[in-house]
Length: 290
Ligand code: PMP
Image (tube, rainbow, N blue to C red; front, side, top):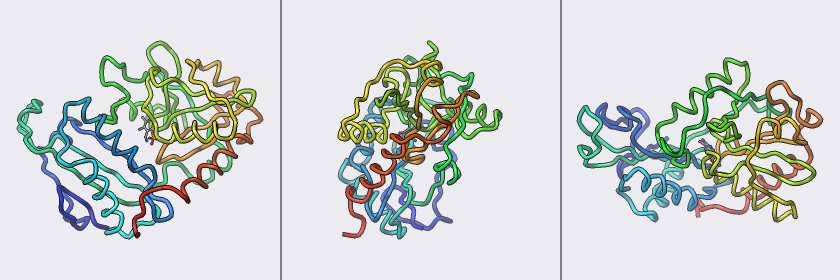
């Protein structure tokens, strides 16, 4: 495996950054999680676009152009021999002094790792997942805006711990008004009477690239997709439910807070979308080995 750090490729054992990096000291930075399928980097442009939006929101000037970041991501996959895998692209505020002033950090660092990921156990993709809503609410827009994919994931990690404590793999986070926001690292969809609903991004969700892909796939298949505010009641009474994310892909949900969803099995529309999603990953993406 070769890791990209600030323009150079190095071995895993040499891939090190300073303890004075504000990404480590304060979670000051942004990142992307990207997938490669069948020798292509899936939705790479969309991920780099979002990285720029996140960086803009935290006043972090990326030290590389959009084109250079795309090329470096593909090259990292090539150097690591990846055809199917998961890419983590991190931009930290860089080395600074103790004290959180970002003006003391002169050079942001860019790190790209191309490896593997298995977010949830394989059998849950067939059987469906049991999830719970948790007490930790999603960050407010007026605090750390949930649309920013920042290195500050403690809000989500606290929710994940609460899910783990409840004996399940994933949490549904509500916002401060009690509306459904998203999972700890995935967006949520429900199916009702053949149509899909997913919370509006304003409810406190990341602008998920998988979410957008699924909306497009569902609409192409003639399904209606709406983005209403959803409550726990709406989740409990859905016919089907699933989560979406680059790492998680599409995973069916069959129980929420002890309520069985639909038949208790992954539903037909969810299964069809999973198939359509995997079919899409075979045909689109930046080629790694042209
Ligand atoms: N919400 C959060 C909080 C996330 O971290 C992620 C990414 N893992 C998602 C949703 C899903 O976004 P995407 O489909 O772009 O990976």
